[in-house]
Image 1 (cartoon, chains in turn orange, green, purple, blue):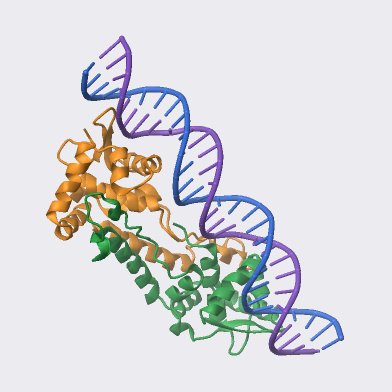
Image 2 (cartoon, rainbow over the protein chains, first blue to last red):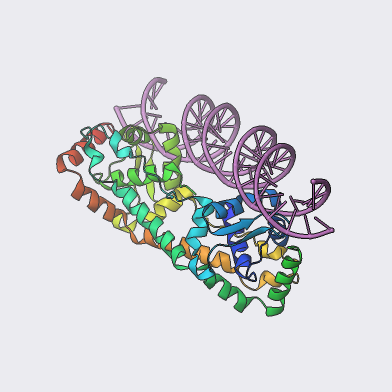
Length: 162
Length: 162
DNA sequence: GGAATTAAGGATATATCATATCCGAAAGCA
DNA sequence: TGCTTTCGGATATGATATATCCTTAATTCC
């Protein structure tokens, strides 16, 4: 049970977009080169963010992506679910139904006890991600990454945005 | 990010094994027929439980599987990890390292901030599973499943154990 | 208006992994 | 001796993640 690598890419891209000056867009090309990722494939992750209305896009030169909301209004779960989907990690196939000792239609009343426990754990995972805002990540990064590196990163990336 | 179906199978099988009379074993064949599962493939899940020392086995007729510990000494996480592995759901490929503005070897000091958050969520998932004991599941089942169905299920399965 | 650049999305190829089956070896029971 | 069992290896298949290519439409700049 491993998350898609696109989840990692999307999170890092959102962190960069969160530090962008007002009104500026960043292209797939710039984000791909900054992170050393395949441009065409990263594009799919960014499209997922776009479909989830987490980012806005514009075409043409100096076009690309920017956040659709402020970083404090975006949480980790939104980003993760945008590229990974909202499906729960545990799928109940209701194998108890195959028990030959159970009368037909018996299992209709309540979800399987095993599934309820697994879903509870899944919800704990989601809850944790839901509680972390993109602004929290940006805060951590600006504490941990030396200011000059952080600044030159944005200069580098904005130069590529034209 | 979906768990293997073998996780579901292992959990249901453990629930049955937990209700077994002292000293009795249950074969793969019996467990497969009870749940309507492919015997050969279910066998792989049970082998995983065996390798994790959650169940004990014996060969020959009337052989099969039984729990290696009491149900209150087995938690959900042990069972899930036995078949799914202990790897975290998020793998950090350290793409920040590709940032051309960072000096080489800069990222060695601390794990990536993104990864730390994802791992925290992963740990919340594991914590929830760790807190649920197999005996809790058995308790829930004996509350929810009518006693006569529960009893006839074990009669059915023990008849196949010889 | 024309050239360059961009996101969007469809089509396709490849690699990895989950799913599933089969077989032989070793061990226990009648 | 013959039957049953677990165990592990080998193999096949299907689904999905990864990756690339191409076309279309929109936007900017000259």
